[in-house]
Length: 154
Length: 154
DNA sequence: CAATTATAGTTGTATAATACAACCATGATA
DNA sequence: TATCATGGTTGTATTATACAACTATAATTG
Image (cartoon, rainbow over all chains, first blue to last red; front, top):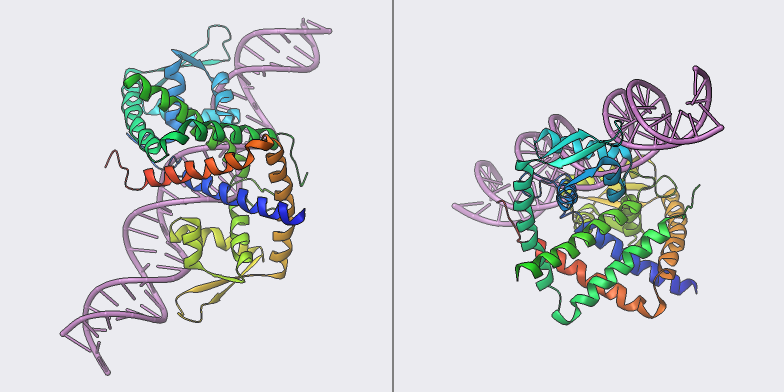
């Protein structure tokens, strides 16, 4: 059983290494397109999908600490791509809106990303595409479920 | 066709967001186990697999800039987990060795990671496991192939 | 053999994401 | 009214990452 676990560990290790490498092409410190990082685009996209978005909802979507949400949003406000207003329901809360400039940037990057995504699709055998995407979703869910409640050192 | 591309973009966007989130549980700035980050463990693992490892080979394995390899290795040397010697074949080059302490740490983290990996496996339907892992490998390769040579802004 | 070019790795400088603790102002509850 | 909870910000800090420039050494060229 130990041998089998080691084999599986090896395989998952390779997969995690690969994932770490490919998430680097959608990476934080590289201006992905139009001077916007992938994470920043994620935020623009989330706001674009809804006409407006609360900060609290955003940090749920991003699955990060509240402080990180503030850090990620501020540069977009500085760049004039997002606007922050007080929420109506609670004056502590903030609501985010896309600016006109932000709408344009979001559109441009969406097109660029669509090209990249299309290329990814073309690099997957046609008959495997649905299966591959479903499998990844299963894998991501499995990792999230496993990470929750998993602790070794604590 | 535009609608279809948008649908696919959306799906891949969700997948990339998911990947960004799950790679965060194997994240750089969090001590994964024994005070070692996932990337640091990757390095210990690569050296452990080979009795010794050249820096040049390591940065090929990590697929990062030479400078990044130096940055990643130095803390492990400071912690006494790795040792660096001049390479025999070229006195500019350096060879990395695992120390006794590094061997111990590598072993402890390996066990911990095996537990995590086993949990991930248990969260994947048994009959899907081989398929899921194969699909991810296909997806990772597709992204790498697509990222190579893809430029939008340049 | 000397000069030139290439290479291995390091350092300076810089960015981005991320988190925890502490904080402030506001809302909810007792 | 006092106390507790919440939304978001700020201080402080870490890690990974990259480009440019550098130094020392190796390889190549004439």
